Image (cartoon, rainbow, N blue to C red; front, side, top):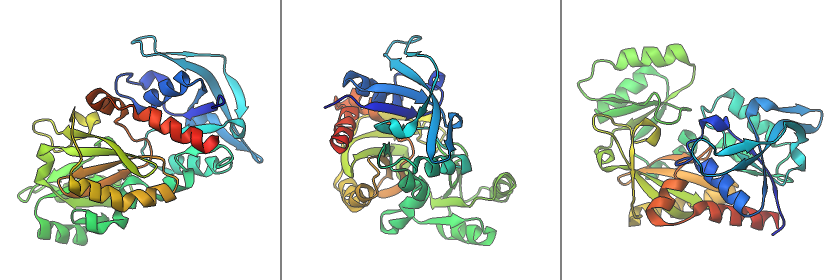
Length: 314
């Protein structure tokens, strides 16, 4: 396979956790395969006429704490001259994120953007999943107070979360006897005009919220994330404990239902969340879990992703 020139659109390198970050795992694997890497952040990208440009640093990475990356001199490049762009900045999925997907469409698919930027824009994690209601727990998306209160009256114990958030931030469990729902809605609605996602609370989350990695629509790895004591959130950013797991027949059924849709949309690297028997989210922006799965199962999913990318570029 010829050497690929790969630009990585991500958050600052200083924020990387070298023992957990999936983008870092992808960069290490790309480098090991002989590909050249450049790093840039979204504010360093702009469209000038028909040319999408970015200020980038050539970068080399190594798994050494305190010395895990080194930058070359800053340069301006035409991103359309790259072979691959990895779109890996973290949400929130706001207008800045949406604009970035529009800009990247100017170079994709001549330059392969992973994931397909149009599909990322059209498939934010808490909205794409709504196309599979038969796989989900009872769920509503909206900001009508009466509808939210009626939903709670039917399902009693609920989860309220921002529609475009990430990492477990702003996720609340509202128990049947909790009197704070009105104040909680006041807080959300004062901060944003966006709808909320409200779901029935699933007690099975105490046993874990499973993250399943699908590559080109195929489930190839998974880990379980167990909430910390006294917290209903299982996100690892929020203190959830990762542990090894195996896929159940129900989870394979869920993957079989959604996998062809993900593949058809060019969503090469995705992560779905399953609690008990229910699909709760489909993560398409910057899924995590590669390093944890490799530690638990010895499966290098970053290698599989690069094999797929190389096949698409070959």
